[in-house]
Image (tube, rainbow, N blue to C red):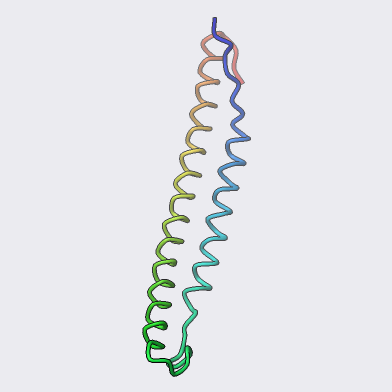
Length: 103
């Protein structure tokens, strides 16, 4: 015989809120780092100094793209977890109503 399950919709929603909060923090980091810029000559007068600057800019841009993707993924997770909580709650209510109970 199955032991059943007990899913706490509120706990799932708290998790979703935490994931969304993390996405918001990532967005703030992305916005702060997007504004960082280096002037010409910042790496000195070495022969490859300008290449270092270009590499830095490429890495900064790629990091921004990665951070944006991470934020979007966390928001997708939050939405899916909220949807799961809603489905569990609806199923619980339907089950209770089918046995003559209800909230």
